[in-house]
Image 1: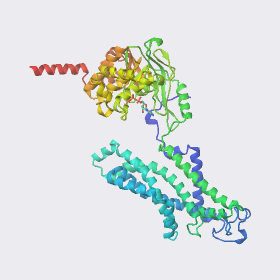
Image 2 (image 1 turned 135 degrees about the vertical axis):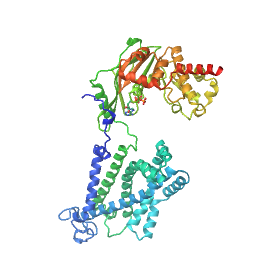
Image 3 (image 1 turned 60 degrees about the vertical axis):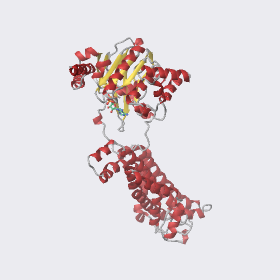
Image 4 (image 1 turned 180 degrees about the horizontal axis):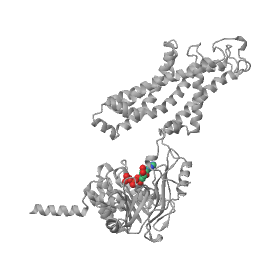
Length: 592
Ligand SMILES: Nc1ncnc2c1ncn2[C@@H]1O[C@H](COP(=O)(O)OP(=O)(O)OP(=O)(O)O)[C@@H](O)[C@H]1O
């Protein structure tokens, strides 16, 4: 099989229904439940006898003849009562779920969206409902309403509403913080409309899952109540039948067996439907199966597309050498989406290699594969990856030793719960095996080296107490503290303001020269390439378009795409030297 790269646009969104049908367990559960529904609907026509017809000749009769499942202790046909019992069971489950939905979902959405008093009041009611012993209240309701089955099922729904409330509130809270909700409000969209459109849409999937699970709980609890004798004696139900069977369990176990099977199978079917739906709508985080990872790996390994990119240096002399790297993800349709398609590159010690390309060209996936940091579902294969001249199968063990990494978002890469000291010292102690005092001294030394003038205060600080620029310096300090042979920086200046960007780039260049490291810097900006890189790899659609020395790429780009990127990057913005020049000229003008 050949791994064919699938353009994003061609990766179809597959409906929930079609994805559901690919789950064998879910399909079996759904088929079983469908049978229960059909039986419930057609019970009056399917049942061979009136479920309440008493014929003493078949009292506790064994299965056979006209009475396929025999007779119960009151002389009624068990099969007919079982079929009509399905009707009662489903009716009760529908009423319960409807009551839970109508109470829990609007309250959950409103609490999550509006917060404040609404949230406090709704949460208080939900907590109160959960702390009340539901079964006792249901018995009281049954006594007070003359055992009206519908009222009882509504009351059960009220007790199950907190399940809906919690799940919708959590989802609404998460969605409420999304920028598109703020954007909608700023655009003048009214709250009711936001609730109806954005919020309801966001909570829809968890509600479907919750309904399947609630229906299972409702069926079980309903049977429990009927088993206790609650409900009209003239309405056949599985719980009632179980009660009857329980009395004669030792002499006629089959009377108990039939309703138990019906109940068990229905509850199991609902549980499996809920569980399958939960997987599909990612209410639970879905981990790629070993099988799908194996399929991706096989497809990537069998890809026939020629590798792209070149090597400049001798393999044993390289700080980094990647040969034919491929990264792929399994898509819901089962096809493999290849996002890095045969990338080859290298960097010598002391060299700065820029990986440049437009958004989505595969730059980050390339370095994530190198760092063993691919997100769940991502699989990488390569003919060879060498770090500091050595072939490596897993790079994780090299992180902090031979490989340092400077990420894109400084703030989100520092743990807000720990001081900077803890976050710098702990890796040095565990990775480099330093004593606490040595690790602290080294951390202090690198903080000074990266330009932080008050290292003791920085060490004592928590991430929120320092600026973004300082946080990036801290991360650079952490990355170089172990004196790695290779420093990988993924868009290290994107999250910083313009003045700090230039300083950080200069710092990286200085450190790279001082420690003799290879620096691989990912950027979409040719200005950054011009500033600090020696060589550049241009990527597009997961492949290397061209590789070359910076001067050569700038002066004679071999590929029109590179020329386009350069002009797009440099057209509207002044380079650092131009900015310096402008500032100098401006200063001179002012002096005059
Ligand atoms: N977790 C993922 N699952 C599936 N595809 C992914 C995943 N992460 C990234 N991709 C895809 O991989 C491709 C390359 O992404 P990558 O992040 O490497 O781009 P990039 O060149 O670094 O762009 P940017 O500068 O915008 O980050 C994109 O098409 C992206 O949609």
